Length: 97
Image (cartoon, rainbow, N blue to C red; front, side, top):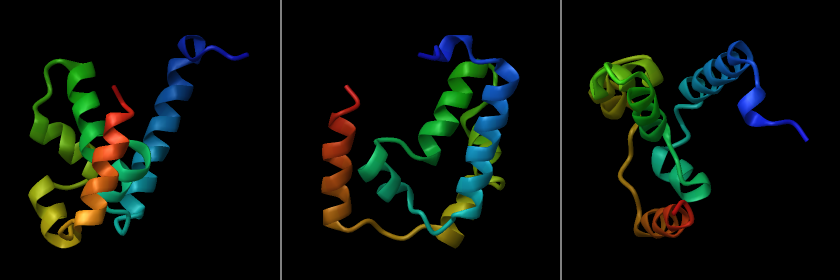
């Protein structure tokens, strides 16, 4: 079985960048739906970038992930969550603990 910790950093970085490019392309995939299915979203990725770097700001990390300032992305692509989406997210995030 392959070990995640031995994965070459360049390979991991390439895969991460491909994931970010995919999420930038699929702007129709709402964060609330990603949270409901997988327990993470673009904001989580940006938080992880911020934590991993230690010097980058939250706004800068979000701009890396979204490809634009978060407020701009939110204004253009965000829709209000339904009660059903919020409940799916709550259940999904509970599995992260």
